[in-house]
Image 1 (cartoon, one colour):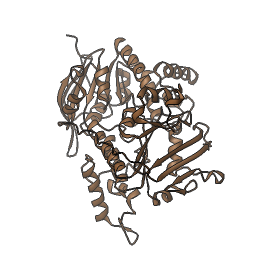
Image 2 (cartoon, rainbow, N blue to C red):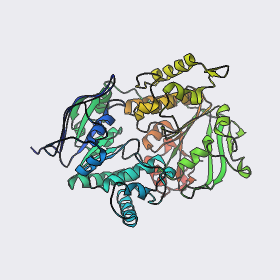
Image 3 (tube, rainbow, N blue to C red):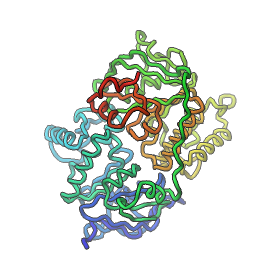
Image 4 (cartoon, helix red, strand yellow):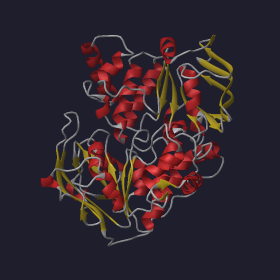
Length: 507
């Protein structure tokens, strides 16, 4: 048998009383695509950091190409031929795309710009090389990370949720690229919560639960239900059925909105029309970078309209175009942003203090001072109800895994009992069990009469959640399409600008 490219033997890593990895054994074969599966908090991210040199193991050994390996830094890992795309990206926001890549990849800006454009076209990962990172959406930043890794010519490429930025038509193209990389000698560690993707692209799958290896299988020999049960140790709950509702009051309405941002790298919005009624979930689909961030900022109140456009956005029947985020929340609006670190939560603050950021109106203050007991009780309720894996309410938000922090933020906003809930990327980076629980909760809230707007790049998620879907492409929204009468391929054509026939659109 061919010797493994990478072997881990007895790898363990602890942070205080938390045992992130316990006696992990793993073999990654040359020219293979190897999945790492597990719930949020199972130890996947820690294990990848150990392989990439971000962290060093407490015990165990790493063997690379038959030789013992001890990595002191990611730079050393890259020199050995190991590249990684993190779930939370490692980019300097004040630099351009090409400047970020130049920090890792040698070459002039002109040469690197051409290579970025070539790789973007080849892998369907287009991004403007001269755009500043702070202007990019989460999906666009992920593209930059993938391109940067490919430009280092790795022998082992670690990819965390690489398809989350792509419409269905381009996922197959990316998979073809990954297979070409594999056949050309590159091994790939592939982390995804989309189990059908694991079955389609991966040769092996190692399953982690509570920091330990609980299985090593050929995913092509198991269906998604079996893989999910191996991951979470139980059967998945069935999707929450949607109750047929009609005629609810309009909770959000945008009327003929045109918006041209001051930022030259931002996407202008043109002729935006949408409405969300009580007892309805409206989904917004689209490839990242087509105006989602700009639309979210206008709805959330982070961006306010000029006076002459102030009647274009209505919430609960009131003109909110010139109201800030706090004033909109007072009307019964709640918001989960796509960027959980920095906008959804403050990494250095405890979960209790992060609860207070938006939940302070829920009787968590007394005479203008924080009621610590009530704030802690609220936080503990959120942790319990939404299965947030954390040492406790005083843990810093930045110490949670991405999926657990997402569950906390979603839970915090739902617990506000808003009339209108806006969720951007509700389950981005969340494992299949937790994602199912979040989606079921959103459908239950919709059944109880809440109005919900969801922006997501996960088409499967939108089809499971939404009563109707609109697609955002180059700053323009498609007509609303009734979900039950629409196929994913139809939405995908809107996402790449190849509009379906008009009679398929349902106003």
